Length: 162
Image (cartoon, rainbow, N blue to C red; front, side, top):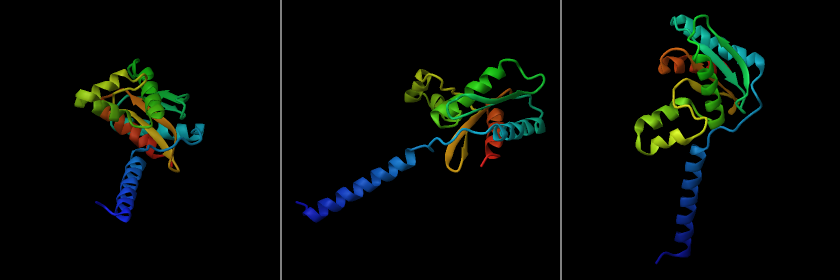
């Protein structure tokens, strides 16, 4: 049998381990909504990345609630990309993660197929939360090219806001 001191020590170690695991699993908290100025800045950086690579993109920036703050679409961008960019941004904001996480879960199959049941979760890369001071202040969604290219532009846009 274990002594009371040993049992207490084991219990303390287990509690600390579970607390650390939970802390690692918790996503960033929500913060104040992104300003129009920062939304434009993020969109401009995403569009600059698209222009550099000769991609035609639609870019949407939303606040933490998924409400559209800013939108722009390059000339000759496929029309369907407008709504897709907004949906990707909303998904990233509301679920506090890049949409690539859903894409990867779906691609893994099995339990990852549950993503299809999540209302508003877009399982296509190109939506990225925008984080400032450790808090999610919005998200950016980009659509118009291949999903990895959309993600590249969204990441460039999100990185401009600190």
